[in-house]
Length: 573
Image 1 (cartoon, rainbow, N blue to C red):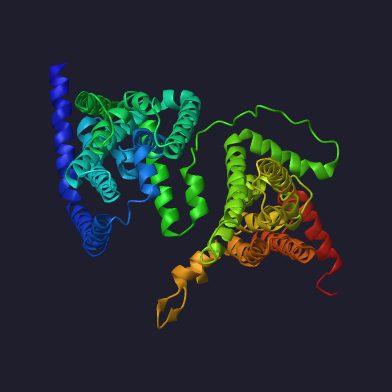
Image 2: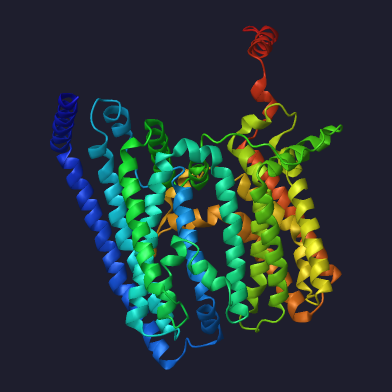
């Protein structure tokens, strides 16, 4: 057995030595690229980051940041700091479902992993690189946040910066180790991950609500101590909370527990990395390669669909809708069923709708100088709600085979896809308006938001059917100010919401300033909505300008049509 292990170790060493020699030029190029990236980051830090921090310090010395907002942030710190740490852990663990800290390239997956060599020397350097990056990014981010707390008047700059750096380091290292463990137990996570992550998001939303409540009520007598001792996310934040002047008894023990947790997590990740399944590494390498290609092509939709779990199973909706008897209800029934299969879309749509109604109420109390921005924010939130509810149209535009059995053109399908988002937005906005009216938060902007639903849905459908970036947009044009490719690409991606916001924001501003909403403004918003739906119809037709049912036309029908045409229009005719 020892002889076999020695032979395996010797074969691994010879293989890696050969690869190092064969890929010496490639590794030199990678080191040059890494050095250039580090130079750019250092240049940005020196010329932008350091002056901004110095200006913030001078503003803090003058007391410019010692206002009501700073006091509320400081009061919510015992709740908000564990929440931020838990959010970082959750995001890294969620990211490990498709990428993860242990990432290898496709040649390594295809050639080295199936060969009889040790996997530890092949995979552990990847984990070590991720740990090194986290050990640099975590303390820097946490130290900057601690320094900003000092600027806001929370305490001395040295204790806050050091405590923030420790919190960032502990959180980053624990997050990387968690991501490696998610990769190691990929099959178990995929079996129970939906429930675990769903419960984690619900708990995190509750903690966020507690942090907001602590900021409004100038602290919470029980939420802070409970969260600070609830787990690694709270243990790492205890030195920062204590340095900010809050009562955190036993923060030294919390820091010691955090250090022990970090070491234990890293040890488990180090031992589990060589046991990561080959299927897991292969899927992540494929997704990373496709994502890189999509980003280089500026195809954000393809990148977004690539990031989604390619092996996820279809979910069953909690509520089954009856199959409609009328043909014109088929597309809305499919859209509603698709949203029920992804309830997160419905939840985000409801949250953005509530935010739009709340922001439209705040716009009435804004100052004239910043009122235009305050009036645009509710419409932006309304568009984001419409974009969440228009996801079935976006999925269908990416794969037209989903509608190959429907006897509709894409221009007709685009209009049918507007029924469910429009109905849900009108119902949600109407319910929010009733609640706001009952609470005494009525504002004329609420009616503007309700009348702008067709325009916002049309903008969401334009974005759903936009397709890939045209080559001429990526090339751009040369001007005295430089190439216009970046500007053209940004405008091309956001042309739907930009057009809707440009035509609806003046109505919101006028209704807010005049404190009334007239029939002329209603007619204008309905006209903008009709134009937006026509634009979505035209965009869908330009993306796929044929009937989806033509894609399923049998071959013999096409051959018969061709023969009939040739016989009727022969060579002599």
